[in-house]
Image 1 (cartoon, helix red, strand yellow):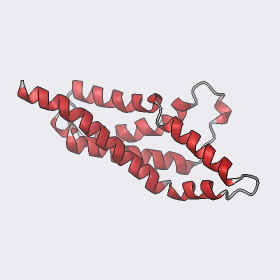
Image 2 (cartoon, one colour):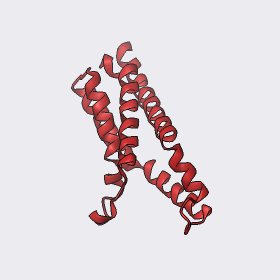
Image 3 (cartoon, helix red, strand yellow):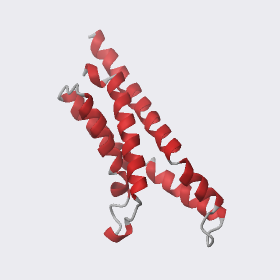
Image 4 (cartoon, rainbow, N blue to C red):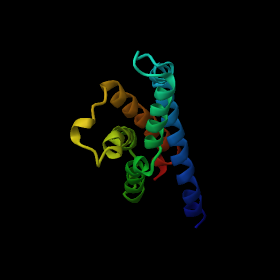
Length: 141
């Protein structure tokens, strides 16, 4: 009984810390792109427009749609008692890499033209978040 209660408390904490680790990786790897957007590197765009566009992208990234793949990964891992680091690391990378697809689900397919760097940053952040979750809670599923 006490172990189950501890597990119920530990899972959300581990999930939040994994999300914080993923966010840290996104910010640290995407810092160059953030600085370019804020300074308006493109000649036809004002810095305030770039900042508003960046804010819009951040709002999309934090939406509920972005949490669903990671929550499904955790729920499946906990129910099936999967303890492998490979499952959580690769699953975390895949869960975060499909976020751009989920945020643009109602838009035409041609509009999803992201650079490979964005996909790499998101996958790397997912790998880090999955690893942090595995260290805190996944290895004891």
